[in-house]
Image (tube, rainbow, N blue to C red; front, side, top):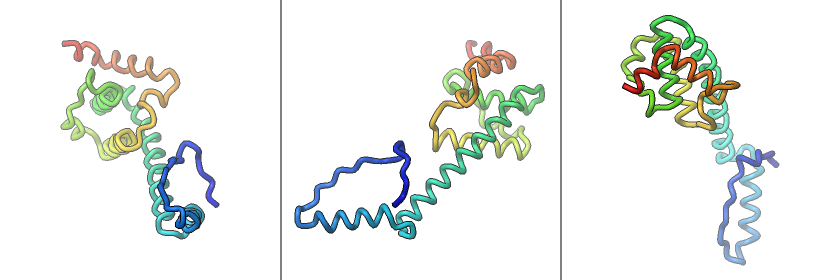
Amino acid sequence: MNTFDPQQILKITVDVPAEKQEQFHRLWERILSDEADPFNLQVHAAQKLREDIKAEGGAALKRLYEIANGDTGQSGVVARFLAGLYNGTRFQFDLTDFRRLDDALFEDCMALLRMDARHCVQEVHTYFEDGGRKWEQMISDWSMDKKSTS
């Protein structure tokens, strides 16, 4: 039988006629135990995709944060992008700024956006120790705090 992560378990309540209870129980056990069952293959594929998106997005976030603390035009775009993910109301990001990024940085932004939009388990700054302070420092370093109040 599969090993389940308790946070990944969904409780389902089903009304089954008494005469179908044993048949339903056998079917349910088959669903949970048959690794080759198309349903389980689909569940495992979705879990693998989610894990891949989280891994790619997390690695991209680390690279982007380093770039955002640089001093190039691309660094400024990445910093504004990260600030927008941090607080989109306070720091709106112009999507046409993506045109200023090289392919690798653009792909990192898309990987991070995909993770944040589809599998958000925490806010971007919380992936870093003392991330709130680090993001506010980055925002200050790029003078975004002054732009957001005007």
